[in-house]
Image (cartoon, rainbow, N blue to C red; front, side, top):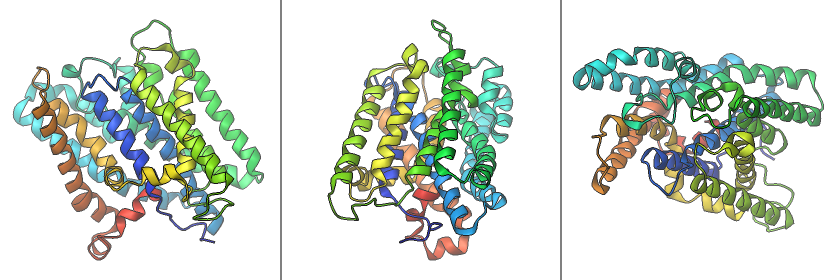
Amino acid sequence: MSNPGQAHYIPGLDGIRALAVCAVIAYHLNLGWFPGGFLGVGIFFVLSGYLITDLLIRQWERTGRIDLRDFWVRRARRLLPAMCSILLIVIVWLALFQTSRLVELWGDIAASLLYVTNWWFIVNDTAYFSRFSTASPLMHFWSLAVEEQFYLVWPVMLMLGLRFVTNRKILFALILISALASALAMYFLYVPGLLDTSRVYYGTDTRAFSLLIGAGLALCRPAGNPGKEGKGRTGLPTIAMDFTGFVGLAILIWMICGTSQYEPFLYQGGMVLQSTATAAVIAAAVQPSTWIGRCLSWKPLRWLGIRSYGIYLWHYPILLLTFTGEERSFLQTAVQITAVLVIAAISWTYLEKPIRYGYSNWSRQRGNTDKRSSIES
């Protein structure tokens, strides 16, 4: 049995990341086949809630405590280098080519550095689904703000829960009740017929259910747990998990391809369904012997998933700042996507990994650190 604090590499989770970031990019490219591509962010939320909670629980089981300072330092080393580089490049680009636009962007930059972009956009009535040509190149930072606010609060709450609620079933129930409260907040704050859904779309309180559903899954289905049937065997549990995972994946594909941001269904339970479907896919993917885990472990998907944070950060400024106002040609789209992938790959190899693991470790273990990324992200 593996050490409960040991980090497990689960390639299928990188495959889920890849699907999520591809959906978001397809939406921002305005590809008509993926009107619900923005739901990829919700997939990231569930996955983040799952991975972070699993990591913290493993540390608790190994040491009897959660080292908050170490956790937050690791988060900073993981998230800040790429984010700060994006902000710097955007500032320089606008200073050189769009000076007037830079003046309007200082508030967005400050909000990004403080991880309050989502609330900044709510206060300033900045709609996420506004015209692309007039959007902020930092518009997508709202989701980073939601996750960082979760990273600040959740470890403390989980630590208190693990300390004072010894029955894991009760703790699981409390997490689900919290998720339900968040979902109800979205339901009641949503105004049917109102095109601007910014309050419920951006709000940490109205999006927390996705993160909490992931957290609840981590409590009952730890990462790297092969289940009762044992690795390599195809018992009933594996078949059941595959069925559940493929149903969840089918729901995600249906929602990404068949829904739009203006459908009341999304805000009245649809996003909860999407988060639950994501949890089903994760639960199947973390079981080594499932077919869905193997499919999601396809090498190109893993490559994209490992670099998905940088891809997500870079894609929006590149698409927006190189937007000419005319309909994109196939060649322009191909060049933009290639630029996103190349820059994200360079950022991952020469900026993010060295700072995250230390330059000495990076130089010695360049071939191994990718495998550490999945469960620690």
